[in-house]
Image (cartoon, rainbow, N blue to C red):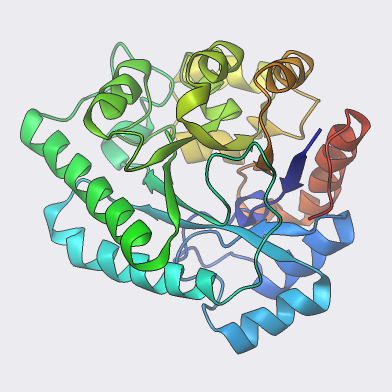
Length: 311
C-alpha cells in the first residue's frame, strides 16, 4: 500500500501555542524520529520556528520531512482575517523552501498540504460530540467562515501552489454532519479538499468508514486517531469540554481504541487511497512524558497492517 504515515505535535499536547506547559519543539522532533517517523506536520502556527536554516537543519539532522502546515485558528471572527492571511503567507512560503516529498500516482494533489481548522471555541467545546444541543452559527457568521476558508485556500494555491484541505474538528464550527455537508456545498473541490479525521468523525457521531467511503472524491489527506471507549462514554455522559476530555485520556494509541482500523484499511485499499496519513493523539502537554511510547505503539500497529513509515 502506498500510504505513508507521519506524526504531529498534538501527540505531545501541542494545540495552544500559549500553553505554558508545552514541551520544547526539539523534543518533539527527537521523539518523532526515535519512534520511527520520517514525516511530521508543523503543528499550530507559532510553535515550530518557520526558519529554513534553523528548522530545516533540525529536520535534516533527524531525517524528518514536513507533510503539512496548519492554520488552527478562529475562522469565524472577521477581525482575524489579516492574521489568517499572514499565517497563510508565512506557512506556505516556508513549505515551498523544503525538499519535495514523494508523490504517489493516485494522489489527487501533492503534499505538503495546508490543513485549515476552525479552532475550538469556548461556547462549542463543552458540546463537542453533541450535535443536537450544540450552538450553531447564524448565516452571516457562516458566510464569514466560508469567506475566510476561500481566501486562505485561493491564496495558498495561487501564490504558492499549496493545496488547502479543510479539517472538521470537535469543538469548532465545522464539526457535525450537517456542517460538513454545508461546507462542501459552499466550497467547491477545485478550491479546497477535505482532510478527514477518523477520531473526530467518531467523536462527533459519524462512522469513519461510511464517511471516508462516501466522500473519497473530496478527500486529499487523512488523519488517524483512536478513542478509548470507556473514557469516551464517560465524557459524553458528563458533557466534558473537548480539551478536558483529551486530558482525561479520551484519545489513545491507534489500534487500542474503538475505531475499526481493519475496516478502514480495507476501505482505503478499495478506494485506492494513496499518499499521506498523519497520526494524532491529543493530550494535555503535562502528560507528554507518555508521548513517545504512544506514538511508537501507533506506528508499530500500522506498520504491522502494511502501512509505510518511510517517506
